[in-house]
Length: 119
Image (cartoon, rainbow, N blue to C red; front, side):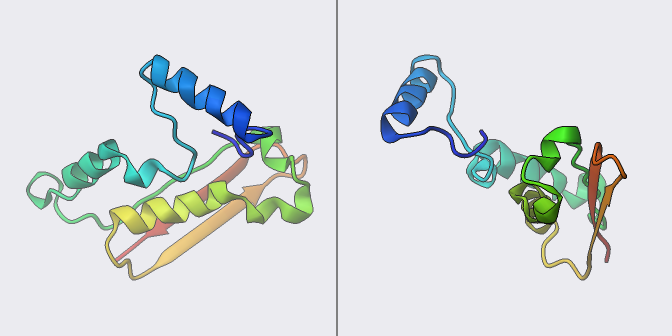
């Protein structure tokens, strides 16, 4: 869910009601860490008997023209980039290193970000 979710409280009430009536859970982009699916993914990926020790996490975000809606001077301030770091910190307990690359071509089209955690 992009923010602002609604222009006023009445609009968000309509959205939440529609979600409830249709069995859909309303969540904004920062709520995923509180979802039971995320807990289950963490348990699954943390099973050292199944995967060994998690040593690296690589993530990418692509957004094209939508990523430049705030203007290039604010390009590196988006919450989407913070979510990459949040995922890394959630799935890799106390990482020793975090590396972030943000590549944007001259036409400000595809935007790629990777967060790599290495032991």
